[in-house]
Image (cartoon, rainbow, N blue to C red; front, top):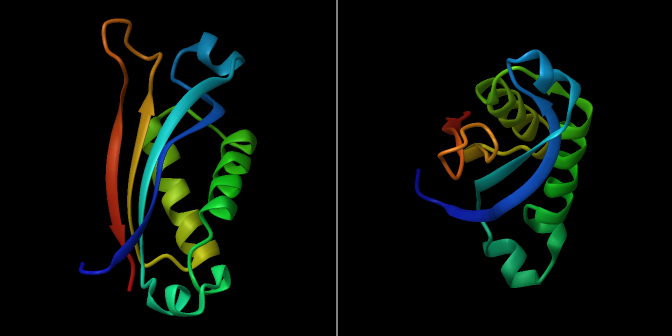
Length: 119
């Protein structure tokens, strides 16, 4: 896909995530990187945030999603979040990386990276 992209890097959110019983009782930190396809030309020409993807609004919505949800797998978190962003912000393509820093003691983080495109 050839387009401009809005990026959000290292967005930290707290959520209930994990397959172990002890993980279901605590909130854990996830780090998210997003690339969101859009055409920035109209927004740039008019200098108008209403004509582009509002990364502050998207970041707030992601934080609310993480706060309200609980999943066993980061894969499920990523897939559901991608669908939500598509539906609520009319995003046609995204790349989303979800990292779970505390999952493996000998690794800085583990996680998934997904790309989704909707027509």
